[in-house]
Length: 267
Image 1 (cartoon, one colour):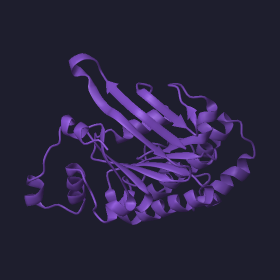
Image 2 (cartoon, one colour):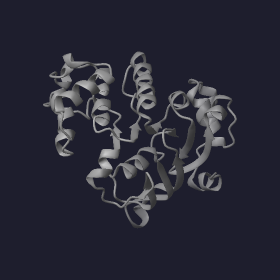
Image 3 (tube, helix red, strand yellow):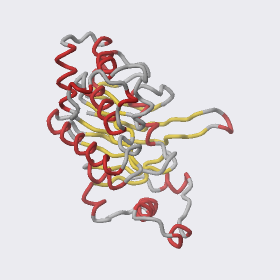
Image 4 (cartoon, helix red, strand yellow):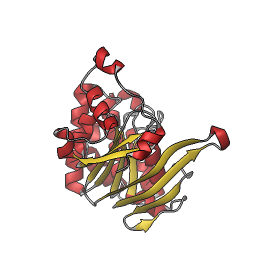
């Protein structure tokens, strides 16, 4: 469903240039889930914006469903690929009701049966018609993210891009949203590209994982390897240690990996 080959993203020019993504390559089979994990600033979300068409400053090759993508995307692309953003408070229009939010993509893509489609997708994400005419400020964080997921699903896409979809939510709500995403994926045979800094979330959601540091993919592994801590790169081991909880003595011994070390260990 998705193939990325030698993706590079450089912001700025000359001595002030920042290489946000460096020769990233991976693929995702149809109906599968792939996770990009790493600390903030490692380039995960930048890859997501390139795939989604939000960022046009890149080089390399991106294929979606077998088709090479240019910097500009057509309407058909956006009917196949949708994104769920990290912040449910900032991704919804504050003056739009849930009904208006869900109807807008249907109007843009000239899809009929507004009432039936909106009612069906609200039931699918566990909200129902009683939420249809509420504004975002009348919803909880978890409910807002369910609306954002419904907005992504309403065009019946094949590939869903998930940019830390639960990191802004309470811990008690995170599991509900993740389980919803897994259920929807099973029912619709969706393909997921999930970005997260949380190894537990990625292990729960994804079959294959790429670890990023300073714009480079330093290691690729599967769910079983992560769960059994069968890791090869020092940065991945350090990331896993950090995810287990704060320990001042361990944290003080952490190493700052530079670009050269990341590049030299590409898998």
